[in-house]
Every structure is written in structure tokens, then in C-alpha cells.
Image 1 (cartoon, rainbow, N blue to C red):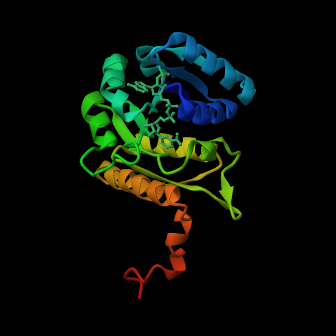
Image 2 (cartoon, rainbow, N blue to C red; image 1 turned 90 degrees about the vertical axis):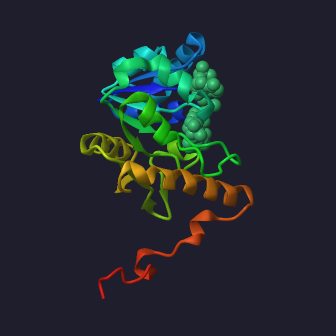
Image 3 (cartoon, helix red, strand yellow; image 1 turned 45 degrees about the vertical axis):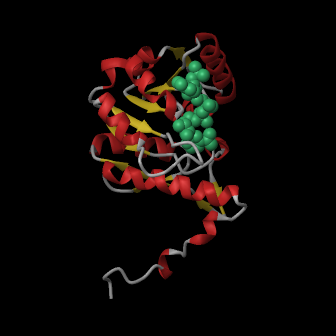
Length: 217
Ligand SMILES: NC(=O)c1ccc[n+]([C@@H]2O[C@H](COP(=O)([O-])OP(=O)(O)OC[C@H]3O[C@@H](n4cnc5c(N)ncnc54)[C@H](OP(=O)(O)O)[C@@H]3O)[C@@H](O)[C@H]2O)c1
């Protein structure tokens, strides 16, 4: 798969390196060509990629990707999407962004904004875990592969996102439609707050067997 990444920061580096190592063609992009090129070179070296990771500007990455990953800071979204341009229309867009902690107040949804500004098929994913988790090969905790919820409306875009989740060694979980992306964004803000307070956010939920009958008797 050709993956264009809007962003050349930590998330672009972590996810893109894994995908390049899994055999995908990856292009990162940022505002500074030198910084993006250096990022791409580092990713190529670490991924031992068959094909070098490329660097371009936002429009080039948007045009390059069969799937485009949005991995920029929230404050940069409008300018980045404007620069990426019409190539995003109708494409699968994987949105990993969060509202910065502790600014989250429920009024801003990056996923909704990306959908409105790009016309792409947005799938919210990868926003619940710290960047270092996405560098793990694979992310497995207590013997269990990490599950990654996906929220989006377009079946083909969701299937592409599911493939990229599987390529990390993780398990895709259908999180429902794009209207539920705001819940993933709120969940990120909530658990980041717990982690900052030193609490183990993983411990707040019971296993499935203790989650109630859910109409099954
Ligand atoms: N870090 C995490 O643990 C983590 C985990 C889950 C989700 N996320 C989300 O993923 C997204 C990317 O995070 P990251 O850790 O990769 O961030 P980062 O390392 O700071 O990189 C930010 C990227 O955004 C680009 N950008 C474009 N416009 C910008 C602007 N106005 N201000 C600042 N940066 C701008 C930067 O471009 P240049 O290359 O030109 O500087 C850079 O490529 C964020 O929305 C974040 O909330 C992060």
C-alpha cells in the first residue's frame, strides 16, 4: 500500500517506520523540507525498508498515498489540510490526532474537522496510546496483542485501516461510525489525565466476562 503521512513528527516516525518495515511505501511530510528529509532517512535506516521512505510537502504526500494518515498537531490541522489540497477528497484518511491535554473540553473534534475540511473518508485510530507504544514490535501487554478501535463510516477506508493495524501486530476493533470518533477523542483525554495523575488507566475496566449480560441472558 502507498501511505502518505501528513506530519513528520513522532507519530509519523513511529507508525511509518513500522509500515515501511512491513513492506509498504511511505512518504512523510512537514513544513520544513530538511526536517522531513532527515526524518525519512532515519525511518529508512531503522525499518531496514526495501524501499526508502520518501519525504515531500503536504500536497505531495496527499497525492502519493492510497491511504493518507493525518499526524499533525491539532493547531496545525487547518493549514495542513489546506496545503494538502484536493487530493484528499474521497481518500481513506486515518486520523491519529488528539486535542492537546489538558485543553480538551468536548467542544473540538479533530476527526470532524478533518472530514469537513478534506472531503476524505476519515477513520479515527491510534489516538489512545503514547507514541512509544507504536514503536513496539509488536505492542503486546500481558501476552495480549493491543486492540485498536477504529471509528469511520466508509467500509473500504476502515478495511485499509484494519490492515495497517494488523501490520503492527495489533488487533483491529470496530468502534462504529465516524460519529463515535468524538468518544475516542474524549477517551484519550480522560486516560491521559489518569496517566498524568499516576493512575493505571488499564485497571479501570473489567474483562468482557464481567461486563454484564448485554441481552444474552
Ligand atoms: N505523541 C504521542 O504520544 C501521540 C499519541 C497519540 C496521538 N498523538 C497525536 O498525533 C498528532 C501528532 O503528534 P506527534 O507526537 O507526532 O507530534 P510532533 O512530534 O510534535 O509532530 C507534529 C507534526 O505536526 C506538524 N505541524 C503542522 N502544522 C503544525 C503547527 N501549526 N504546529 C505544530 N506542528 C505542526 C509538524 O510539522 P513540522 O515537521 O514541519 O514541524 C510535525 O510534523 C497530534 O495530534 C497528537 O495529539 C500523539
